[in-house]
Structure formats: structure tokens, C-alpha cells
Image (cartoon, rainbow over the protein chains, first blue to last red):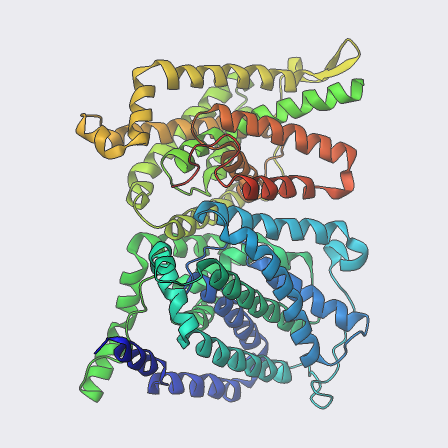
Length: 343
Length: 289
């Protein structure tokens, strides 16, 4: 017979929930109850994780290197801020979705620019779009508040019943639920035939086109979805901090995002989530050692990661967990080195 | 009419400066196919070295300029031999991450050593002020930049086209394997070219302190400009980046003068449009392979 059934069985098998994943989410929820004094920073991590997840969708699965993902984050952030500020849509969940759609529309239209050309052109175009939006936001300061940012945003209770409190408890669980739902969606997407075709495109666009995958249309689709995710992350940022300023578009934000994803590893969805946690911990650590110069250490981490090699670092990091799993379960390691990274 | 000429003049000076700053990147990015976002860091190094020599040690400006070139080139060659060399064969993503890391480190390090405020280089009195030329105000400093950068451009073109080193470089870029087969020491050629590019960036950084402003965030602020020059100009010769920098310089100065509120908007739009229209650059044969 053909190998077709094998492929689908494999795909279905790889899409099944593993024990490790369930443990991961239980740990995440447990953190919410264990550290009630740390809601603000944990909310920040959840936001970053969602943002990193959105980049993973295009970088890890479709192989598009973007230096300007902050553009969508910023659009989401400002949309949510403006919606709340002018009382157009007061209810946070609806506003979140609308802000996501705003970023999605931008993502759809810019995707046509991004799919053209090779890596370098993509880098330039994505970077250019983010800078363009930053310049626009600065230019139309009567709408965006310019360098002062949007001020006086007041969020209404979520679904009309859960008010944002000053400890950030509501904000945290709200962000976490959003992250989890969108994660489920992303998981569904990447394990679908659509997601598999994206991986084929990443590995070899020419061959993918030859076996009948509409490369450009698939890339446009995933780029648009990714923009939606980034927009929602931005909207969460505005809603949980009641703040939106020009730095949502900044290059540093896009660069930090890349670092997060690289720390966690690309192409298996959890990379962004783990990367966000590690990144935030590193950032806190460095800024307690040298408040002003933590950028130096972040840069050093990047350089070291690249020089040592991303794959090797992940092997080292996973050595202990794999050892434990092998000892306990007595079979092949469950936690595997993430699939080959985008090149 | 005279304003038009003044804008043109300032734009040309600005563009020339951008060319000197970015032509090293044209080689690493366009020719060696290495995405080096840290190019501005070398320019910043040159600028700060010049500033320290002139302001703190009291060296004459024209002695400090060549030293800025040499020091940046030295930093460049050390980094090339120790770090960059390992990354030529890596993916673009790795190169981007690595050079962003370098940028971050340089920004924080300079901030730590020199402070975060803008640095000015004390200019000799002969370079200050401007004179009238048929009613067009010509800044002495800008005139000097045009002269220096013009000479450099001619020299570069001659080196590339006429010298043995130039032909080796072109051979190494066209086909590294064949070049090695012919007995050309390709790594050495690349290292030397990289150093030259960094040195030029350092010189550009020293010259630009007056016009672009020198502070620790220099590499981040002007990264996009360097990249525009290279991607728009293409890399088949140095004429492409040269014309692109002139275009960018004049466009930016004119944009700031005529539509000041639009700010950098004009430049980014032009860049995106050009990249969509011709992904390999205006004058490019292959901007990236």
C-alpha cells in the first residue's frame, strides 16, 4: 500500500497530548496560586509568552525571519488602548479580539510584502514596517499621545463581572486563560495538515511547491494568524498595564522577542513559553546586579547562544530531564530536542 | 532656489557620510552574505575614540581621524578572527541574533564607560561656520566631508577595480571555492576586507559626530540607514551603494525640510516600495543569495 496512512498516523500520534505538556500547564496554573505577590511579573511573562508564540508560528513553522514583529504588538496595544480610552468597546474580551483583528488586517496586507524576496529583504521589510508604524504613531501624536503614550486608560471589568485589581490577580488569570486558549488554537493549527504543509515549506519551499502546496497562500495565512496573536499580546499589554506608549513598536522589543524564542527553541510551541520565563528571570537577575546595563548581559547571552550553537544548548538543557525520564519510565526520552530550527 | 541648493549640498554631504559609514556593510552583507547588524557599533567605536583623543588628550582633529580609522579596523579584525569567522556558514537567523547581541553589548558598554549623553568633538576653528558661494550657504565642515568622502570613494573604486587585492576580492566573492582552488587565501581576503570596512565605518563615525550626533544608541538608531544603503544599492559594485546613499541623504534632508512632520516616514516608505519593486536593490545583481 501507499505510505499515506503512515504519514497520517504519525501526524496524529505527534499531535496527541503528552504527559509532559499536561504537567507543564498544571505547573503554570499552580504558579498562579503559589506566588500571589508576583502577579505583575507573572502577567508580564504570560504576555511575552503569547508574543513569542506568535513569532514561533512564523519563524519556527514557516521559517520567516522577522525583525519587526513589534509592529503587530504595537497595533494591538494601541487599538486596545484607544478602544478603552474613547469608550468605543468597554468590555475587555471583545476589545481584545477587535485589537487582534486590527493587527490581523495589517498582517494580511503586509504579508504580501513579506513573502516576496529572500531572508534579507524580509528582514528589511519587517523592520521597515515596524519603524514606519513607530514614526506614524509619533507623527499622529494627537491620537496616540506621542511620546507620553496613551494616558488615563480605565479598564472595565472582564465580562462585566471580574474587575482588574491592583495586585494584578485578575489580570494574571485573564492573560493566562487567553494564552491557554490561543495556545490550544496554535497547537491545533500546527498539527493540522495545514501546519504540516508549513513545515514542508520551511524545509524546502521549492519542493513544497512541486508537490502542490500553494506556498505563497500558506505563508500569507500563517503570517496573518501570527499577526493576530501578536496583536492580542499587545492588547493584553495595554489592558493589564493600562498603558500604551511608543516603545511598543521599538526595535528592542522585536529583538528581545527573538532572544526569548531562541532561548526556548523554535518549532515546538513551548519554546516561546519557556523562553519567556527564562528571559524574564534573566532580565530581573541582570537588572538587580547592574540596573542600568542589563542590556550588556542580554547581548552577551545572545552572542554566547549563537556561538555555542542553539541545538547544542538545548541538548545540554534537556540532558537532565531526559535522564530522569529514562530512569523513571525506562523508555525512550519523552522530551526531545526541538525539531531543526529555521534557517 | 538657493534653499534648494543648500538642501542639495547638505543632502550630498549627508549621503557621502552615509556611504563611508555603510560601504563596509556593503561588503559584509552584500558580498560575503553576512547579515551584520552590528556595523554601526564599529562606527560608534571610531567616533568615541576620536572624541576621547580630541577632547581629553588634546590631539588635533586631523590626527585623530586616521587613528579612529586604524583603531576601528583593529577592533574589526580582532572580532572577525575570533567571532565572525565562525558564523559565515551559519543561517541568517544566527547571524542576526549574534550581531544584535554585539550591538546590545556595545551600547551598554559605551553607556557604562562614556555616559549616556551625546558627545561632541571639538572642531578646529577652520572648520566652523559657513561661507557664501553665489548666495548658497556652504558649511565648511560639510564641504570637508564631501571632499574626504569623495576622495575615499574614488580610492575605493580604484582599489576594487585596479589592484591585485581588488581582483582577489571580486574573485573570492564571485565564487569562493574556485578562488581557493586558484590559490587565493580567501579567509585572509575576507578578514582584510572586513577590517577595511570597519575602519571606514570608524572614520565615518568620527566624521558624523557633528552631523548625526554620537551617543551610545548610535548603532541602533542608524542601523536601518546602513541597511537601506546596502539593500537598496545592491552590491554588485560600490557605485550602487554610493548612489543609494546620495539618494537617501538628499531624500532625508529634503524630507525633513519640506515635510518635517512626516519625519522618517518618507524614507521608510521609499525603502519598502523599492524593496518590493526590486528585491535585489536598485542597482543590484544579487543583493542576497
